[in-house]
Every structure is written in structure tokens, then in C-alpha cells.
Image (cartoon, rainbow, N blue to C red):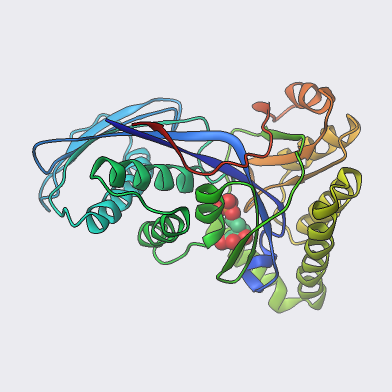
Length: 329
Ligand code: PMV
């Protein structure tokens, strides 16, 4: 059996504006998805997922077109878990030139699903790494990132950014501008995440910003202003000024709010973090629901979030400088 893990991520800056060519800075966090893979002696796949949602599930199927998954879980849950695993397995079969390889796969994830923390990218990256190593091939992190990006493209109908998969494969803080992804210097960051238990619809939120930007000059200016905040944020990260970094993250949240992608629960959590003395706080990812990211070296923000209506879970998650990692042979 071969086991790999890969981290989730938060956006320190730049979501949504990155769609229009502005830079963005995602950063890997110490919350991981772990994928265990054991090759079978037939061509079937058996996937067991834990923690992807409240109830785990197991599904076994072959690649025959008429085979139906034997599963007792909702269809969307199965699609969410299995789509990415399937795409990861296809990549591994291609890399190792083993088109008929079958596997028993177990996924354990500590990353809330669909909440802006890159859970699907982490499962895809760890899945490709474990399955290729199980077949005797080691991929460098950049090729892994590229293959994971292609796997996400296949599952998400051609709509995926390179940010999540690159960040999960390489770890640390990353600068993304178009197809250009690179590692950037960052200090230890006292990250606190608040999760409202929900998720936004990324496609709908991106379309909403696009429409607003076409109708109002202020919205186009707001997208450019986010780009300015990101460029300043990069410089501030390099010198490690956490107070200024927090201030810029809070500006970024205000600009995202103006673009209509926040929500009452996200705003509640951002205000709770501010009141608790966080250096800064903002939503992370597409918005509409899901997670906020705050910076606070003390326990105050985490404690305040735990008592904030609408916050289902609050946890500390430092920046993870390690990307994909072999956990077993
Ligand atoms: O919610 P996430 O982690 O999928 O992030 C979406 C980020 C957007 O900028 C809103 C969209 C994108 O593809 O970059």
C-alpha cells in the first residue's frame, strides 16, 4: 500500500480578480487530505472516503460503461468524491503506462469540502502521487501539479485555475498570474480559519462578478484595486510585516464585499475576528459561504469564532511549507 497526503489552501489575496488577469496569492495550510492506494489484481476501483462529508461512503466499480456504482450514499456525494479520484487514477495509469491497473483507495480528509480550502485539489494531488508511486513511478512536484490541474479540468468541465493544485503540490505561499505559478517567500503566518458549514457556488459567484464588472465602472475599478492590494501584499509578505499584511487582507475583504461575493455568515465571522483583535480577516475562495481566513498570533480570534452565530468550526492552521508528502512506502 502507498500513502500520500497533500495540503489545502487559503487565499491571502486576490480571488475573483485573478480571473481578470490580476495576481493572486494562495497559501498552503496544515490541513491535509490523505490518500492510501493499493493495487488490485483486476481493473476495478474501490473507493472508501471518510470525512469528505458527514457520512463516509464506499463505492466499488469497474471501468465498464454499463457498470453502476454499488453504493448507499447520495449521488452528488459520490460524484464529488469519486470524480476527482477517477481523474487522478486516469493520470496515474497514463504516467505508468498501465491502462488496466485497478486499485483499492481510501481517502481521509481534514479539509471541509467545497468551502474555499482546496479540498478537491488536495485529494487529486495526493491521489495521483500515491497511485503513481504504487505503480513504481515518482513524479516531480511541478509535473504532479500540472497533471492534477488537468485532472481538475476534466472533472470541472474545463473550468479550473492552476492555483489550488500548484499550491497543494508545492506547499508554501504561491503567486499566480494567468498560467504563471511560482513560489514566493512568506514568514510563519498565524492563520485562523472560520467555517460556516456551507459552501458557495463558484460558477455562479464568478458569473455575478463578471456581470457587475460589465455593468458598472466601479466594479471594474474594484477588481483593479484588488490587484493593487495583492501587489502590495506580496511586498509585505517578503518583509514579514504581519500587521500590514492583516490590514491589506481586511481591505481585500471590503473590496470582495463590494463585488457582492460575501455573505452574512462570512461577514459575521470577519467582524468577530476584527473585534477579537485579529490583525486582519477576509473570506477565502469564491465566497457566498464557506470559510474566512484571519491572522492572529493569540487564541482570541479562534475563541471568538467558536461563539459566533453561523460559525460551525474554527481552527488554527499555520502555513504549510511542505506540499505533497509520502506518508507510506
Ligand atoms: O473557492 P475556490 O477555492 O475554488 O476559489 C475560487 C477562486 C476564484 O478566483 C473565485 C475562481 C478561480 O477560478 O480563480
